[in-house]
Length: 85
Image (spheres, rainbow, N blue to C red):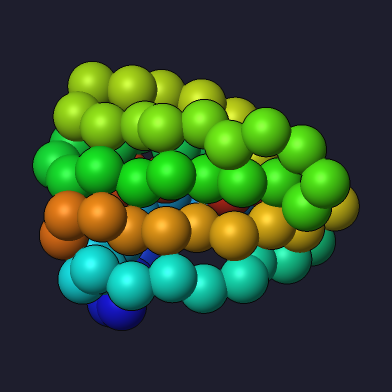
């Protein structure tokens, strides 16, 4: 996984950038709200105790603060993100 921060707001309360990752699975815990736009690749996201959701190129979604669950990266991913800190 690699992350590039491309912009930080003047107040430091928001960052934007891009993230890449190769195939694999990891458990994620989110402390902040994140807007995601998938540019390339395929991911299955499974919130703990809930049903999974498949996302791919062109999909946009929000990960709420407090999210915990598994991200299974099926194909190498490139995503744009905005995180409210």
